[in-house]
Image (cartoon, rainbow, N blue to C red):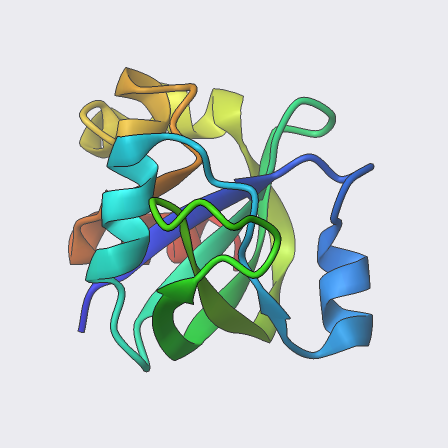
Length: 134
């Protein structure tokens, strides 16, 4: 299993809205590296949901329930989506400041490539953030 982190601005699509919806396709990705990460996602992979801009917190865990397919919001065949479903809300949101302060997370993509909207995580990075949020 692989682990990932996706970012969403809460005013555009919040964790709360995601939980109400129960499932969504992850659209709007217009960066080739992020797109390639979507293409690498496999059904059952776990995904951390991060509120960007406002909050700057990891707030929950989702899972991939459908692998990549053409983004239905565009005719451009370069762009894809995956379907995600919420799994669990973190007991305590984990802030970007906490992640930056944690030595074992110094190389995490969230810190190194702050603008990337879909990124892989090592299992130990994923587990550490979950531990910080429990």
